[in-house]
Amino acid sequence: MKFEPTLECAKQLDANDPLKQYRSKFLFPQHNGREVVYFTGNSLGLQPTSTQSYIQQELNDWAKFGVEGHFLAKNPWMHYHEFLTEKMAKIVGGKNSEVVMMNQLTVNLHLLMVSFYRPTKQRYKILCEAKAFPSDQYALQSQVKFHGLNPKDALIEIAPREGEYHVRHEDIYEAIEKNKESLALIMIGGVNYFSGQVFDLKSITEAGHKAGAVVGFDLAHGAGNIHLELHNWNVDFACWCSYKYLNSGPGSVAGAFVHEKHHKNTELPLFAGWWGTKKETRFLMKPEFEPIESAERWQLSNAPVFAMAACKASLDVFDEVGMQKLIEKSKDLTEYLEYIVAEVNKVKNNCLQIITPKENRGCQISIVANGYGKPLYNKLIENGVIPDWREPNVIRCAPVPLYNNFEDIYRFGEILKALL
Ligand SMILES: *Cc1c(COP(=O)(O)O)cnc(C)c1O
Image 1 (cartoon, protein in one colour):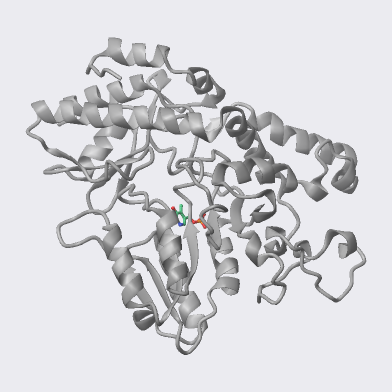
Image 2 (tube, rainbow, N blue to C red):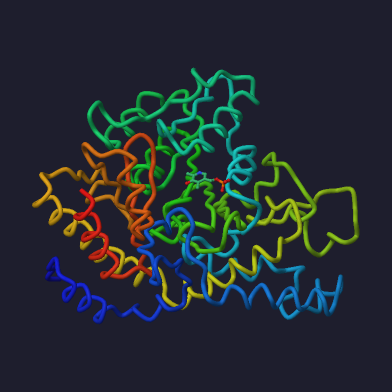
């Protein structure tokens, strides 16, 4: 693909984009009468135009049927989570039995760790990222303390080397090797939220298993962004939210994956609720918990239908497009963004530094603007660009292939040049 730093080139690239019609299926915030440059789909994805009607359907059925809507609604609420499973499973590369939409991300992380972090006297350590997303840090620390252990001793944090911004894979493998006698669990984010680095989940899983550890991933920034094959990679468990790349609305229902090799193991400890017991006997209201032999076993409660309706609206769009095409476009968009940043650098003293590794990234590019702090970010917002700011000095930009286009990136470059 030939890039030029011109509006004509950006428009041409957009005209040739096979997914161009999808932009009109999303609602963009406006700034001075035109669409903002929305680069925060990695934080809160935009609203699909179809979402409202999906939620309205459930409101109508609630009005019409009351409690009978559990069976009589067009999409019976009793099974609502099942409407999401197959489409979600395709996105993360799981079998249908391995994926369930339920709760929220941090809740799922805890529920899964209850089953998969089972420290013993000898094996009790968790390998994780240094400066992981704070909620993950709190979850890991509190799980460790819950088992009466000390996070300082039990958590092995892998950090970038001095002066570097992303973690070297060789350092991860070395830490696994070094702790192979005491490692219980590897739990890292599939994509680092700060640097945008994508980890080699297949190899990390292999290395973890070889050392005798369980391997789980937080895919908050991975689901709907990068290629995933959770089943084939033999990942033990994973969780993710649906409001970032998956456009399901603020705080919407989250996802969980449990590999099928664990489904028959009904001895796994878990925190149980009635939605995890067998459907055939659930309404006999028996005192015995009869575990469903699938990821659904980890469900606690009946389906939050409105959140799931929003999720369904978005997953239907994903299903129509498919991850493969999204990833192809994602590569082109991020390359163009990288190119435009380099063009800005030519006239602005190379003040912009991309800290996201070129060979391991999804659609997020994290930029350090040397010599400029948060005021630059504020100015971008004032000028109709919405990236986000992460302390201490990073501007994250995620051109999302479903709805961003090359012209957004061109406009970003022009606005940035004017501000620097
Ligand atoms: C966004 C994000 C969260 C947010 O957790 P919620 O439970 O959805 O509030 C947690 N962890 C990571 C890695 C994230 O990117």
